[in-house]
Figure 1 (tube, rainbow, N blue to C red):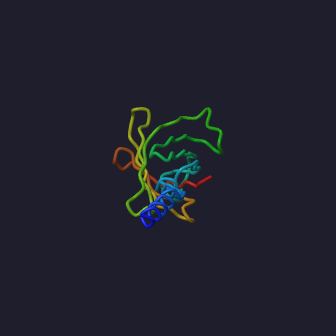
Figure 2: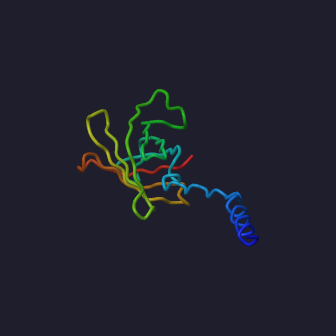
Figure 3: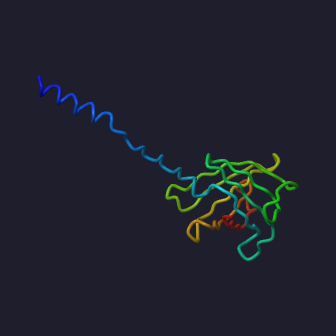
Length: 136
């Protein structure tokens, strides 16, 4: 009987030990989340338009057109979505421009994931160019 009581005491003591919580795994989108500022143009040697993007961790984004810095109060805003490439070395995003066209941007990460460079296309046509973004 003593052995049973000792065994029960050991089981109760082991079960009542405080377990450390494992941290939740970080979302893959966490590396993109945040505010990015950049330029786009007809090609990589002709960046003419300023723009910025606020990437949210849930895969949505907001693009601010023709903005320098962080004051986005009086600029065009467009909502869209993005997804990391399967190898997590780049991303693809798309948004609708005032119901007139859909733009897609595809880029790769550079400089320890602090910069994105890539290409943009409108409605899959020849209307295309290059862009870059720097994480703020």
